Image (cartoon, rainbow, N blue to C red; front, side, top):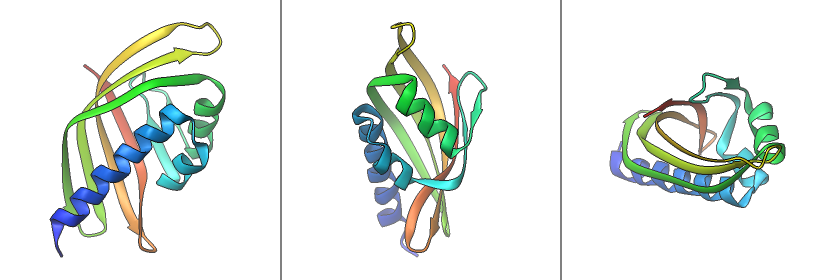
Length: 125
């Protein structure tokens, strides 16, 4: 198994996930996530895939989503990606703008030839 092509693919998919959040491209975002997704926000709130997509669609505008210092470790059909995350968002209901800085870890799994995110955990920094 060659690790570097998988590492590059995970980094590409994460760039696509960040782009989809800013564009509110729910179709692309949904395609990047496993149906069994567990998304743990830095606040401790836990969402499944449907809840996360609903939050993006209805409650938050992502102005900017950036990743840095990404480290991807590959273990067969599982990849663990971790690194810094910075997001500028607007809460739609209140109009409040927030800058969020966190360290995030994601688990990506390969199933039926495609990589999908099945877990996300962020911790404020």
